[in-house]
Image 1 (tube, rainbow, N blue to C red):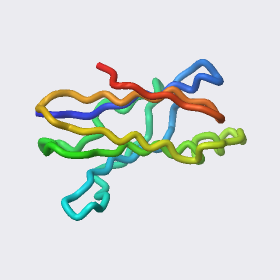
Image 2 (cartoon, one colour; image 1 turned 90 degrees about the vertical axis):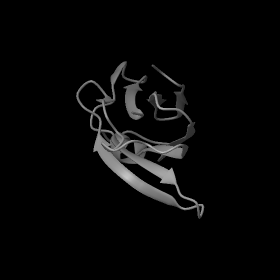
Image 3 (cartoon, helix red, strand yellow; image 1 turned 90 degrees about the horizontal axis):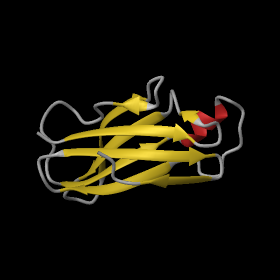
Length: 112
């Protein structure tokens, strides 16, 4: 069964980005985004299971990180109010979508 997880690190502080709102969407056949789930990162900056319990269909997905809310909670400036990572699920496997962020930059990659 396919699954999606995430991990966010606040590189400006050198620690996990805890309580970062994250949303998972899937692109439907009509080209519209459908929200599948929402969660907050834990104290370690992780969401261990972002996808719903049922199997993921092959398709295009988006993990959206609400960085405006996250940085606003600590009264820090933010240049990128949302970070959207769009990727393709093709096979029945685990997809890990990490995010390295600071108020003025971010980076992502396919993790394990």
